[in-house]
Amino acid sequence: MLKVLFGGSPACAAKALELILKDSAMSDSVPEESYRIVGVLTNPPSAQGRHKELIPTEVEQYALIWNRARNDSIKVLSPEHIKQPEREEIAALEPDIFVCFAYGHILGPKFFSLFKFGGINLHPSLLPKYRGATPVNAAILNGDDETGFSIQKMSLGMDEGDILYQQTERLTGTETAEQVLKNSALYGGMNITQILREIARTGNLPPSFPQEGQPSYCSVIKKEDGKIDWNKSAEQIDAQIRAYTPWPGCFAFSGDMQLRILKARAATKIAAQDPSVVKNTSAVPGTVLEYNKQRGILIQTGSGVLIATELQWQTKKAMDYKSFMNGARNFIGTVLE
Image (cartoon, rainbow, N blue to C red; front, side, top):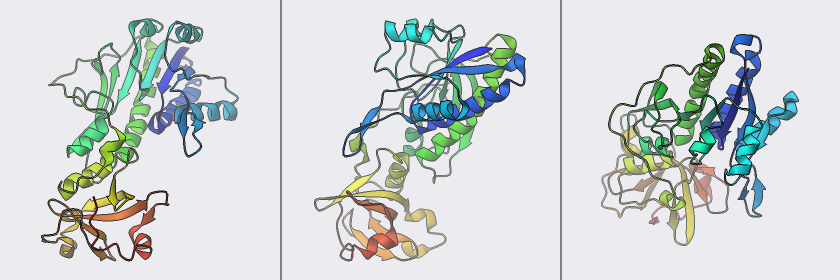
């Protein structure tokens, strides 16, 4: 039986873990393709909320749910750093291969020496484009018309390993980062199960091919990147909001109050159905122009109009634009900063 250590942390990785665990259970019916996840490697719990309660990662939460539901004994490891004691703990599980999706740590040769087949990584871009931690966000911010995912052999260089499998996904200009990551988790997870079954059956990694093309890199996202610059175009702000959903989210200020804009779209995207939303004004960027009961709240940008459809005042709950306007009667004419 092929023994697998899974590494990951956020919700998208938990979805991939779910698919792989369910398939691993079914693999028992085909003994020559049988594999099992013996451990999960994830980030430590993080302090969240007003009371800074320590919350485990979504991957840890799912692994514990699986153990309880299936009476399984998957080992959950959540170290701050991976040093000799942690490597010894991993080695005790006798894993054959490391499967990674959004774990978030740089791993060295001593770590990879623990695995007969090394590691494979699910990366949500068409490598070598967008190596790094935020490829989906970068694709949306740049207005790409396609993205996808790569399953690669892990190497010591960042996302430089050879490709085992790639799949392309068309982008329509309406997707959020959260939606694209869910697709990568779903379809990437399904393909990882096939690769693991093949390794179990043949005793070898499937054929791979080198990355082709000029590499590009994406930057780390910071919370302050969510601040909206109203001098940008409506299309750019639309992309920013979708790229930063769910984190860090996009926000502006109305006076001293922070206002999060959770959902919006550039007016040009619906101009064919409703030309009334396209405004030619000399208003200062950030000016709240109009409340359109059918479409949303119209806000002037540096070029074009943004239509906000879901908003949230600081410390308040998120609201659709109609509910929001019920409690913001003097909002029209405000200049957001």
